[in-house]
Image (tube, rainbow, N blue to C red; front, side):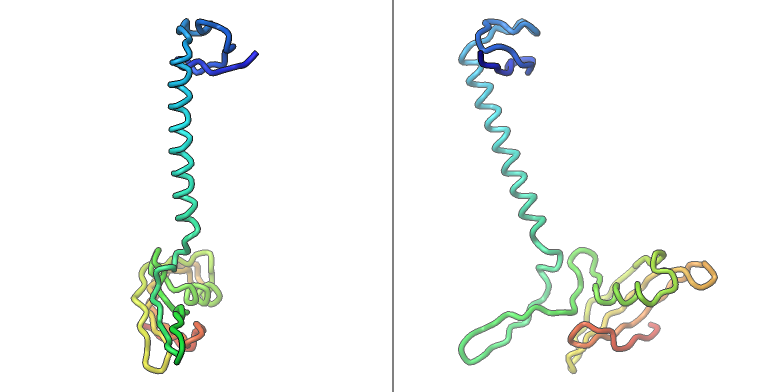
Length: 161
């Protein structure tokens, strides 16, 4: 005995009944086929949506960052920049990591504003960051720093802005 879902009330019923014992709906082969077709379309829609969301989650937040192309005599090779602003919040993760290690209370660190990364002629990069954090007395202070990073992404200097 096969079990099917009533097209009207969606409760499970025997495939051999002519009317649903729950809602009284007349069960015909046409109604069952139409119901199954509608269910398939719904599942296809959910699978497509899931695939779309999954594809978005596989894209890294910095995937649209600036690329430099180096040319050799035989081929062109794209090189991904190390120091770039995040496409999500304009932050620079090397500076975020460095600040979390240097402030008095890393849990209190809140970023307010980031400038665009500026590439210097010597290969280093400079970025301004405005942030709020607790000081030694437990009070929040806002600080504005100009941070310089080398071509590998290491902080080499900083000063008040």
